[in-house]
Length: 412
Image (cartoon, rainbow, N blue to C red):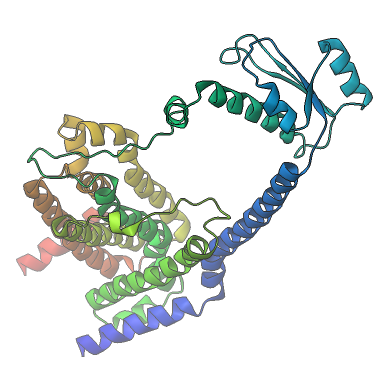
């Protein structure tokens, strides 16, 4: 009967949530906005690319003066330019529209700015003047060096391949080994931020509708709470998939238009221990935060009163990011240790340290055990608070109000 009741609660909660219009409006509004932004960026980049292409193909008249002696007249001539007789005459020709542009190269182009004067062709088309002026200077400098290899080295475009080793002398994975375990941190934030409010109000809805007495005549409070937690997790998975869809589509089909750098997935290095610890920290943190928010919902008489506590819980999640530099650079400092072991900052801090390989196996196991043990204790407290707070409609339920009843029950 208990299993049947649990499955009934889970299916009812999932169906009730997924059939609500406001749930889908809240869930789809972010992907829709992302889709609109992606479409606008793609359209803008396409227009810009077309404009740049037309600028490259379009010739314009220009003259130049060179006080540095760097500019190669042959390069200028190949682009259709001429040397100016005087600076004043060239600027006057630009102002009158007889000349499209004039470039004045200073004595030291590395330290002094090259002056570009041009006829206004619009915000986007005006960029062609500076582009051509820079191209002339770069090509002239490369021609004077006379060696393509030296030119590449001077510009700092030579490729560099770095290899690093950890304290054990093994090849370290670099950024490729950090990304996989940090995905659990991203999932933790997504789950709590998306579902936190639902966790908080999961028991308040029945309470505000005055139907909890009827529910508790047919259901055990533990079964009800566990069913709600499972249904929240399932709903969270649905929301994450919906949120991830536009990102995946953008990466697969519009990567070049969005200027998203290509990433070779073969460079990812997955450490089984880190991944297992990351998964356990995610689940343990989810249980702890869910139990706490459900317990708060059982105490408060209305959703408005409970919403104040939700802000505090979210703040606790973001506190470790104020010390993220310290967490990465000095993970064994006193403040980082406090963040690692304080229950409500532990999931984020431990997931960060796990990603950067600074969480020792002993610490990892200790934090995981702490999260699960405290999470289960908080869930039990939430069940007890719900049992006594579900029929309290006008005031908050204090923790001390349930202790005398427990002592009395023990005495009997």
